[in-house]
Length: 177
Picture 1: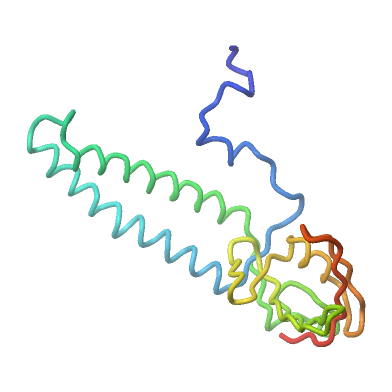
Picture 2: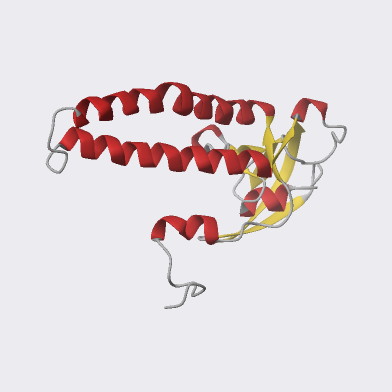
């Protein structure tokens, strides 16, 4: 294989090689702070601790059969990979403060939308960035099928969403910030 052959790469590089959706990627200020806190913890707390553990394990002698040394080196690679990912992610993210949204009459990033399906079941979702998704808490990406369908909708608008179970129709009944 040649150096430019796209099939000649490590599986670890697969996620970085995949192109993402066009346009900016939004995140809330709280979401960005969580990512920054994770970065700080990995860089200033976790990584130095693992480096000390690896140095102690290396001092014990034979590294080829030293589980602590092997595990520590693997953990360092994982931490370094995550740090690199977070640093690249910071460059790609655009912080949006939902409380400062001027648009209040339609669903936009940061809005909490309540919708009702054909059976009368109500669902509430908050439209967040892909780094903040928490399905159990009702936090869905604005780029997800439901999130994208809700964007720009007003109260009383109908929304049709293609789901694995088929097309679902919702009526927007409330939008809050």
